[in-house]
Amino acid sequence: MMRHMTDEAKPDAGNAAVTETAAKPSAIPAEEMARLTDEIVGALKTVYDPEIPADIYELGLIYKVDIEDDRMVNIDMTLTTPNCPSAAELPMQVENAVAGVPGVREAKVNIVWDPPWDPSRMSDEARTTLNMW
Image 1: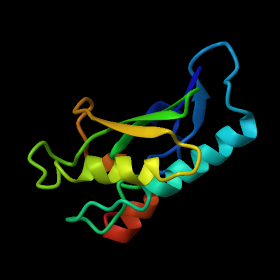
Image 2 (image 1 turned 90 degrees about the vertical axis):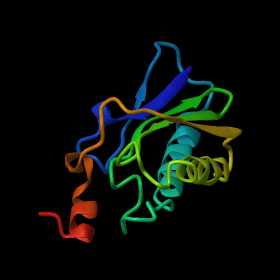
Image 3 (image 1 turned 120 degrees about the vertical axis):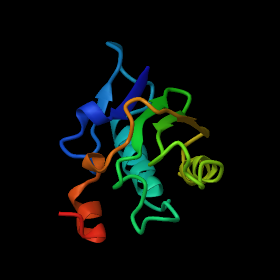
Image 4 (image 1 turned 60 degrees about the vertical axis):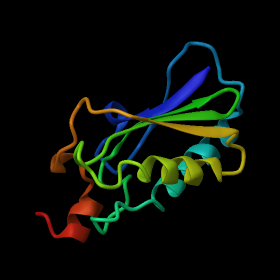
């Protein structure tokens, strides 16, 4: 079974929820899944867009995080623009940060463009940091 955090499950861009994607229970115990989820979000918050002084999670660049039973983590993320100068380095930074979480077997980032990113995806924390009210 796979569990994931998605935008649809988020009350706002900076708060992710874990939702089940299948009817059968996860092979990962609930407490371990909660720990993995918290630590993956923490790892995502260590990666900053080099042009914007806010982390990629609070900027709303993370669209989906799937944690598979074998502890493979698949991440759908976008960039602020298709011409982002950090397009080559940010996905690798995300993969490295998430792969460093104890219990994660591997992390893989998929860059997606739908829906396109816009500032409305930012959390209140990012808006405060960037003074964008």
